[in-house]
Amino acid sequence: MKKMIKVILLGIAIFTFAFSSPALAADTASGAKVFSANCASCHAGGKNLVQADKNLKKEALQKNGLYSAEAIISQVTKGKNAMPAFGKRLKSNQIEDVAAYVLSQADNGWK
Image (cartoon, rainbow, N blue to C red; front, side):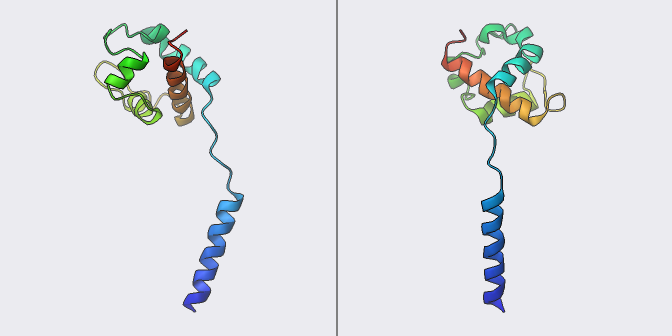
């Protein structure tokens, strides 16, 4: 009986992984649009109009522990200090797209 249950569970696991769709990569073009509509008023060109030293340039993101998609997603979702939380205003995929956009722009010097 235990062997049969193990075989069934293994079959379910194989079926699940074989037919599940892969996670979609974040969309930087969508992220640019969301950023423009929600973030650019304070962060135009990767700057920070409220706290200049906490900008979105690569060096500042690294210094402040925000140079990863996960960290940016958390910051945008929950907010912190003067930055408002966008978790209730934006969908999770929009926030993921913004994070991808910010990282790509940081890597390219916000050109």
